[in-house]
Image (cartoon, rainbow, N blue to C red; front, side, top):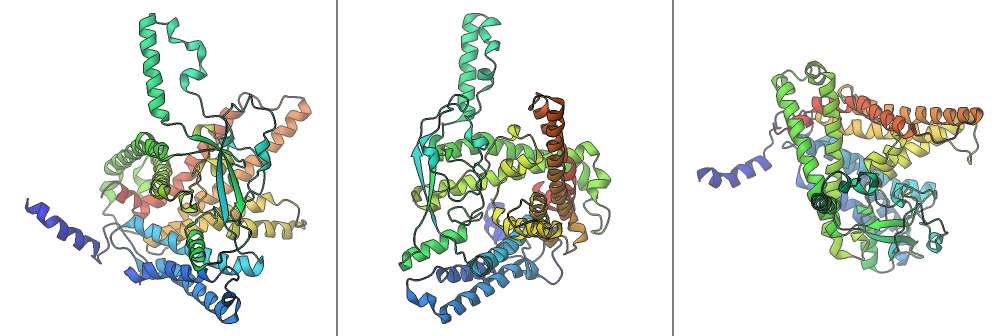
Length: 514
């Protein structure tokens, strides 16, 4: 009973403690975060956004207001970048990592929206209104006729290319194998019972059917007029991570207006039957590996050799790598679904529009490029586009003398992955005493995946050309098998650098509950 009485005071002591938790190595010279340091960057950013759209009112077009707007934007950018450089969160290693992500993402977004967009491209993002129109769902293999709704293409996509989400939902195990009818192997009554049980199990796992819809996005013709609309516009843009809902978004990876609209029941079912079980299994596995192999060396000096290399065998390294990847995937899904559920009552407001975080099932992916394009989230897509893809394309065209309208795919891929490497290394260094050398694991991981995308594209083109010369039909049965083995091997072995960094940073220790 006394322990329960002391619980509130212990919780308050923990929340306001300035002593770094065990395993946390903040950047020297940083101080515990203050509440005003967390509030001021997004607040200054929001106030500056109020003045970003052009008139009306006419006052926003004056030199004084533009100067004020730019001044607030510069201040917000500085405060965002300063978050991980001047402060740390003593209570959590993971929150420090996220604080760095917020700082670099927020600072880069401010520069993009206030200076790169308006002054380099003369573009201020317009709001996009989304409308979902019911559609009749038909199998992709049967529905070959031109759909009259295809004329409504999303104005925010750069290419029209059918993605995985344009196919029918994956059939159940028994639907895929009609030759395995249970009636052929057991008595009729037992077969009926087994088939009924399998039907109930499949229904329970699949959950409520999502609504088949056409998603039509229409940019607004004008700008917000009233203060209320301007305030809503500013808040929507500030909360839109990947630019969804505005004309400056990167291409949606679905590249189609045919999609399925998840309901609140869909999201709750997914959390209960898929996300939470996978998350618990991952945490159990991480804790078991850490307790058995890494914990004995937890008291080793900070500058000693990595416990990941010293105490984990290759199979355990790969298992830990796969488990961390799966955990991050379901953790993003959980956060995305929870926000969507909370905001669902605001529909049809854009605040209630949460496009799918992942657009294909993991077992449908057959390449490294397919994983990063369709199998992973695109929350940082706008950042990597502006600070990685565009510079990479420009550099390739300059070095090779290409015209501006010629493709620069190598620069695009390498630039995007290098920008990702910088962002993630910047974040993990905040819990590694600011040492860039110890934070190189994530940089190596993303850079090597960029190289893998380039290599697989070169090999794929060479194989296509060789088959053409030999008269071999394109699309052999083993292509999917080879592709899956390839991308899984790339992510596992390159991901060891990622996992090593998380072990060294203490992030795995915190996930294991120590």
